Structure formats: C-alpha cells, structure tokens
Image 1 (cartoon, rainbow, N blue to C red):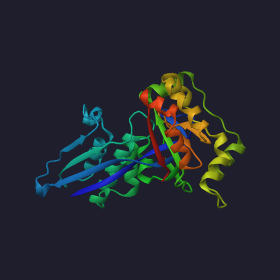
Image 2: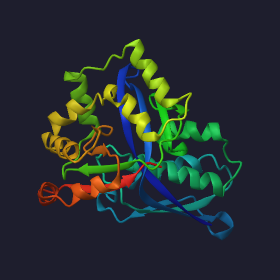
Image 3: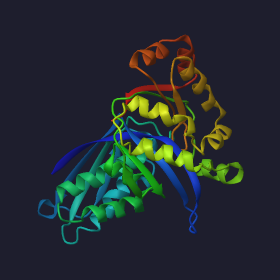
Image 4: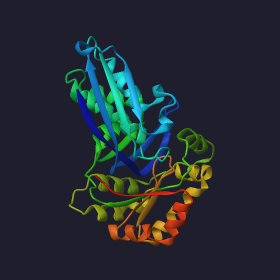
Amino acid sequence: MRIVKMAPAKINLYLYLPGRREDGYHLIDSCMQALALYDRVTVDVKTKKEGGTGRVEIKTDAGYLNSDPAKNTAYRAAVLFQQKMEDQNCDISIDLEKHIPAQAGLGGGSTDGAAVLRALFELFPGTVDEEELIAMAVKIGADVPFFLKGGTVRCSGIGEVMQEALPLQELPVLLMKPQQGVSTQACYRRFDEEGRATVLSDEEHAMLEEFLFPEETVSPIDRVKKVCRIWTNDLQAAALTEVPEIGRAFPLMQAYGAFYTAMSGSGSAVFGIFENEEAIRDLLASEACRQLEEDGWSAYPVTTI
C-alpha cells in the first residue's frame, strides 16, 4: 500500500509569546498560514501477510537528515502510529523529497511528520480517531497539529489549541532565506535571556479577533492591511542577534511594495506580502536580489493556500 502526500510550508503571520508553562514550554498566540511550497512525502506499507516485521525506514534526498533517522519528525510519527496498530505488524517506508529549507521557521520537519500521520490515518482507518491523531501530533512537535489542518489557523497553548480562521487564500508572498539558518533552541534561549514579549491592548485583541473571524466580507489583502500594523514576531529580535544577515531582506521587500514583512517562526526565513505577483517578479529581477543570491540567499515566490 502506498500513498503520496504533499506537505506544505507555513509562515507565522504573527507570533506572540505571552508566557511559559510550568514544564518550560513557551506559550504562543500565533496565526499560522499554509503556503504553496511543498515537500513530497511517500509512505509505503507492507503488512504482516506480505512479510512485514515492524520496521520503519526513511530515505531522503536531503543529506542532513540521514545522519540519525530516529531524530527525524516523519520517522517518529511513523513509529508512534505503529504503536497504535496492535497486531497489524507492518513495515513502513518513508521517502522524503525536500523542497522546504531547513532552519527557516517554515515548519519543514513538522509538515513531514503531519503528512506521515495523515497518510497512515488513511491507510489504516479506525486505528485512531481525529482527537487521538492530534494528541499524537502534539507529542511529535508543537507545529505538527497545525499541519494536520492547514489553511489559516490561530494556534495557542503550545500550538495544540487551534481555531480555524477565515481562509487567506492566493495572497502573493515572497520568502527569502539567507544561507545561514537559526537554531530554534538557540533562538528561544536568546529570547529568554534578552527578549521582551508583546503585550496587546484590549483594542488590539479586538482587532485580531476581527481579522481572524470577520463578521463582514472583506478581501484577504484588505483584511491583512487593516491589522498588520499591530503584528509582530516576538522571536525576531533574538534571531537577528543570532544571524544579523536576516535583516537585509526587510528593506528590499519594502522597497518593492511589500506592505507587510516579518520573519517566520524562529527564522531564518523572512516573508513579504505583496499587492500582486508583478512586484515580486520585479524584485527577483533586481540587482539587489542578484547580490543576495550571490551571497547565498534563496528566494521562493509562493501564494497562501
């Protein structure tokens, strides 16, 4: 049995860190948005009657993921699901074709784990229900529950409390990433040492609610423009301290018409939301963009989905 899943990237439109739990996990308030940038995840299963012995194997075209498969999110997702299968002994083979850059804040590992869970959920119906699947996702990683849903979702708690917002589809977005990535652990450690959490006023909270769950029909671009002035990423300053190179993307995007720019997650990818795709094409053709590419930057024109 084989199934192929396209695993999308995400950006954090905003990311507030209002506190920490007693176990040390950071609480978040974030709107995550799926993007049309995908890893291709193939899950191939051999059941017991075909000689399955309970192994999980993973292969990928990304060399950095081959050193220790047991640390791979997709691998851990398969092992966790397999534990729920009782007497259905099987071998699970996972093939990852990577397109989402690593250490970028785009959820490349989490989306692969979610894709494996969704694939096995379809291949073995009745093994777990939706609630159990989300609980498994939480064990694997904080962003994995979002990728089970996709779209536009407000995530709170440590990422497991989700509210589906009115979708923001087909917004032109440009991702730009320097060669150097940002370690999530290092970024949060820097935030704990030096960072300051955003405190929203009651009026600003109301603006967020109106953006997420509007009572009137408003175009996606107008929705974003109305509220983005209060958006921020509480990890951005910490990431810039770790990798100052990140800061080169913001003024370039703004010069070519991005009406909102921010870093996603713990970085190092920066995104800009534009009025149209023509502005993104102009930026990509510019001498400034060519200079960034010579310095190791990568650029990905995408849309929200």
